[in-house]
Length: 266
Figure 1 (cartoon, rainbow, N blue to C red):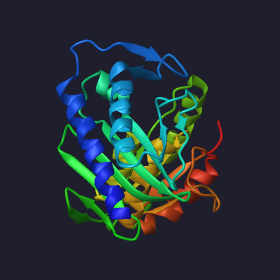
Figure 2 (cartoon, one colour):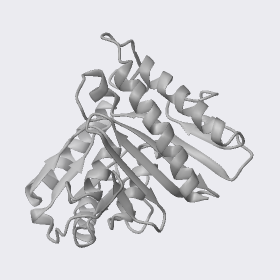
Figure 3 (cartoon, rainbow, N blue to C red):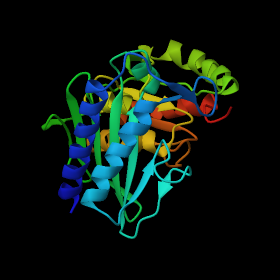
Figure 4 (tube, rainbow, N blue to C red):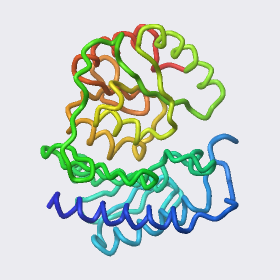
């Protein structure tokens, strides 16, 4: 079943990616969501509709959770099967808005409450990251794995910032505590691609507060299947409260540092 779900996810992501590249207008209409810096364009909603149509063709009774709302503004359409699709039509909308080549289409399939399949497409670079639970992670069909980094001081760490000004101020405080301890920090603007970068050894760790499920559902599985440790603080699961992912040897010291810095608090 899971391989079939992966095929559906990949086909839908590729269709959306082709649309987003080929049909991007010279001028995008921009609306805002939670704050003036939290933007959505007509291409986000159009791509989500396209993905939804593809997924419903494959599984008419499946549920769909999409960042831009899908059917009902609560971002969920009800389904009668055991499958729920979790969709981010453009992860990195601000990058897409500014024509920066760091955005992705992310689609995950959840079966009975467990993420079983993930596909993250980076159309700008022609890179497709995929994973099936228990089957490893791949980049363009080739197996990938996390780096061998085993020291926090030598780790390149990715992170991101929220849209609320107060949260950003707090995150900047955490960042000043992390930066002197690690090799360096990267803030690239798309959580799914940060996690995929970890999965293929381009980053050694990643943390962020304030993610939504569609930001990490697919890429979190990809990172896990590539050998990353993924979690929250103090044994809690990775979530919007705090998402931590790293190579096995870097995870514990990164976790300890973030716990000391109270990175899960605004």
